[in-house]
Amino acid sequence: MKRVNIEGLKEDYTRDENVGSAVDCLMSLPLLPPREIAYALFDIKAQFDADNQHASRLLKLIAYVNRQWITKRSIGPERLSVRDNRNGLTYAARKAKLT
Image 1 (cartoon, rainbow, N blue to C red):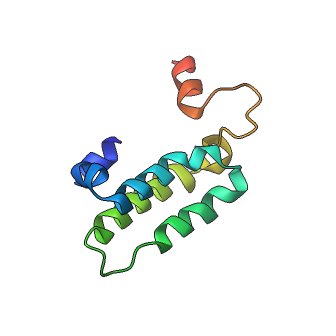
Image 2 (cartoon, rainbow, N blue to C red):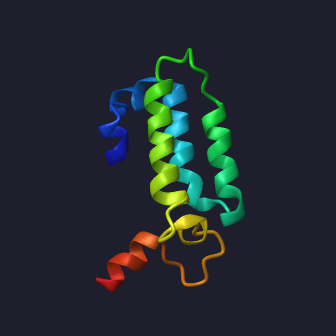
């Protein structure tokens, strides 16, 4: 949610159903199987056309999620996904446990 603030979408998240839905979908990506996360991100991105007043900020948010969580070698879909996670820990919980 911090990045939603940074991109200036905080108020739009609560007021605009499309923005709220997109952000909720982005936050739900870890619930998907790893092989479906990149496809889902593409589907979220495809929902917005250039005429949407929030499109540029949402696309920046989607690019951030892709860069920092999906394509980053140290994380990627396999570590991001909590689906069928045998030890029951999310990436953030595992990282916190190590420090």
